[in-house]
Length: 388
Image (cartoon, rainbow, N blue to C red):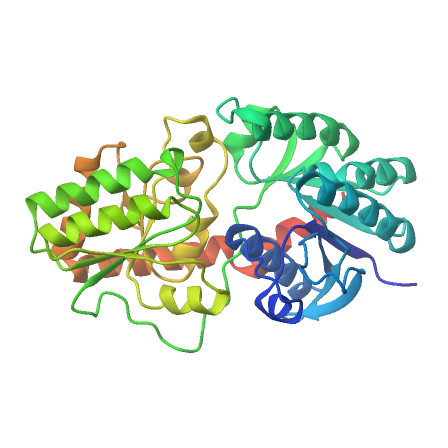
């Protein structure tokens, strides 16, 4: 009898596939979570397979393909077009994939609740195949406009079509959505490199601020704190690396302003490949997670960057969002008490002034992360949960 498979449906790609299909599709948090979970499940003996809805850009190459990337089986369903057309096209290719491939003994895990999953979810419900929803960021009243409406409608349509049990990004998210039977999976620690990275050893302190940067995730908090440092402690030797999705012109203006006043540097990075991003991560000392608890978003989704920052040995400097204060404390992170630029600037100054002690905190944070987020630890909880 063929082995049960776990299909993880998600909009991810890999650097290898981006080169192969002449595309640039890299979504850091989703990529880290999906590949990490599949690698963890496979390390525990489960047959986990990624089913990707990431669009390719070659008009001559639009058919679904079964591949292998990063050592993980990877089915790339056909996707083409833009905006709504792409979602409609993908909905039918996902349905076609399920009808041809998914057997009754298999399990399906859906990364979030994108509209293109709707036909797939209906088919799985009708055929009795348990589809488990992995809720990463539930619908919130904070999200306005067409995107917010689409998110709320999509969740309302897809949630009843999936199993009563759900994987969630945080317990606080599950409580807000009223999900009764949940397994929190915050993320999976990446395997440690054989190359030893020594943090806090350079002449300048490296601080990373990345991800989707907006007011809710700390853009105002960050820029105000950097301006305070430049005005009050202009001799600090700190490099701030800004990556991800953000208002580039705004951060270039910040760079010009603070570098004219102080020794601080603001390095504004463009789109980075996975390799370029890994190289940057090996050179910085502190990772910022500045999602604001005062916003609804900050009380729901667990920041995936917390897993990445701590598991790679950077010092985590974070607000008290989601489940973070339940997992990390003052002995394993630089835990902010509030959302004030004054507090952030002061703690960054303290880290720079006493790097040896904060390096020890970073090491303890990494040890805690490896215990919680190591692949086998995650797989031992997740595999039986998906089996039901």
